[in-house]
Image (cartoon, rainbow, N blue to C red):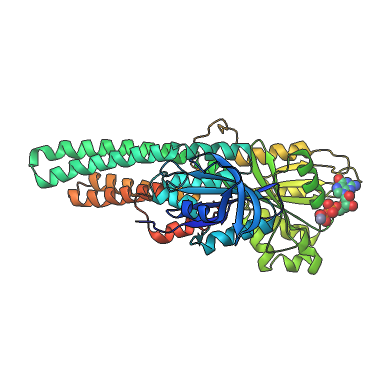
Length: 456
Ligand code: GDP
Ligand code: ZN
């Protein structure tokens, strides 16, 4: 694929900041900057040096800037790149952007700089994806996973597994071309050994993938319970205790509040479903799509009860809902006179961790944290590893290729003709290739890069 146009974008967050950067990449980047930039001294713009000067629009100074030119191929995109460091307000940034557009650049799509790095062969797809992960990492742990992926840990593993399969394919092809009865049995065994070794490597990668995914995406935890049991108090207590890294108000439903907290490197996305009561009766509302959505999508449910009240119809209904879920039960307000029948709760929710808290007295919060950690990782998780598959796309392709290899082994065990074995192995090779981008459709690329932020 030949890339002939030059793209431009504002690469720093929109808003007021000390500096902002407009970035261009492509064959015309240098020409365009020479048209709009004049050095303040006699110094010319040279490769990889910042030069001080001004951006002009029809002899009018637009902004005072520092410009850096980076010559291909040793750049982020492998193309000529120009970065214009200007004042960070939205006005200079927009003005400079529009000057670049006027002089022949095109506005970059989301993630297009990184996409070019991929298309120009500087990085593979897993590395490109890790760039987005780096930006959106919610904990240091998540960041470490992404760095490792950017450094090529996953690419190398996948490539080596894929190459093993290609070698096996070659052997089968030779056997198809020269079928000889007496070597057949040996070849079957040999191929099966090779395939089993591939299977082991894939299983090794999949082993910690679920944990990797949680570290990357966070664990969705919904806090549910009747009005006034202490959901918001719990949320605040947990957030105060941990280092809240990201604060966000859910974009779609205003009355569901989401916050990220960090428990031992795991980003936990807490969702307070408090808003449910504001519009309608909880019992009715629980059946409504929205609350159902939050509840159903949650990886973990924290179900809260009020120790100072008798169990109500609503409690029973909620209990029924959490029965078959990953759930932690909290009996709150233990500082008040106890009216709740605890036995009834433990009978109903036999296998659940039940924790007593008094958020008023700040008691039991550490137990809740421990329980969350326990629920996520069980007892045997190696949190020191930074080599984990974490992206759902990679996980599902690995699972597909695993199925292909199992099918191939099955075909061998049934002494099927080589062609049958070959078909499955070929599928496996294609699926692994999709992870690194060696065999990948255009739609998929568009889809992946559209999740990037602008200017990256
Ligand atoms: P939510 O409606 O479930 O979000 O409940 P809130 O967190 O808003 O709490 C409702 C009320 O209960 C507030 O006045 C809290 O201060 C109070 N509360 C929360 N936890 C406790 C507790 O452990 N003991 C007592 N006595 N009051 C609590
Ligand atoms: Zn609340």
